[in-house]
Amino acid sequence: MKATLLSSLLLAALAATSAARSSFSHGGSVVTSARSIFGIPRGGGLFGGKNNGATAEEAEAPDVSAERKLYPAMTEEEVEEWLGHIPVFAVTDSNGAGVVLKPDDETSVFYFFMSPQMANSTLQQLKSNNADMDLRVSAFSLGKVWFKILNADKDAEVKLKAPGSEGDGEVTKGVQYRLVPDTRDLLGARMLLTMDPEDGETLKAGDSIAPEKAQAVIKKAMTESPKFNETYNEIPVFMIAQMRMQKKPSADASEEETVNLLPMYFNLQNMVGTWQQFMSQAGPDAQGVEPAINLMELHELVEKMMEESEIDFRNSLLIPGIPMAEGGPAQTTAEVPSQEDQMAKMGGATLGDL
Image (cartoon, rainbow, N blue to C red; front, side):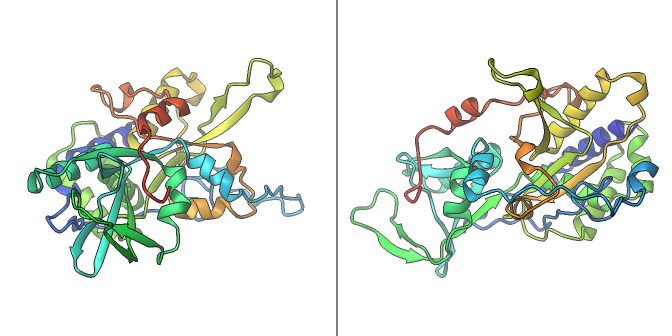
């Protein structure tokens, strides 16, 4: 069953995480040699492209005589709200001012992390070299930083000041803002993009994967992925075309107002765990269903959302990362933290230009 393949693939990715984990050098630059990938649909045609995993019914030629329904482009405000409940993490001082790293005299870099663990690793390394600095990891709303910082004017002026120093600091421009994905999810995406049927059969054999076989699959993913050659600003988004979540209507709403949402995951393990829970509760007729997996890059996804589209992006939901349970993907809860819970974790700290 494909769910077993997904679980095995995830275990292989996790087994090799230590070899591919991103870290920071003393100069502040990412030092992972492997490059990130993404953006090719696999197993379904949700966003166009090759429909490798389509069934015979799905592969039938579309009725060109039928009028296609197009949904209006989402506004910048709608996209900001759509991203708003997703936390991203950065190293700041106690006042919430961001720590800008300078790998050389000509470059200034500020990192946002999708993973709090990666942000904390950076914090610990900075503290080990700067014990007197009062630093911490702060959480921010991805919606708030998406347009105002990550995709803002590259020549915007920023005031830089050494922590603990007196004076007004120096005004500079050209600070590079980088959004860093979780290394495990990049690795999982690479594997999805580069796996062939022989690789799939190897992983389907069971959850106990020989290290040499796992390393062979991972090496192929690292060296043969068709896209995503950076370790930042290319963020994997995973989805399964058959999956839907029901949005609960308000207390005064009628039954007809129940909305089905397409969940989109930043975290591969969350998607695997949710799919396995769904399959465990499904009837016998659904047990042979293979998930139509789609991969998108977040920037490309937002671009599509801001264009007229046949896809109703307003009825999709981004799922923030949830740590894997001890029992693995199948034991990881599919419950999505509420927007209020996510925002509460972000606290009140803000960057100067928010």
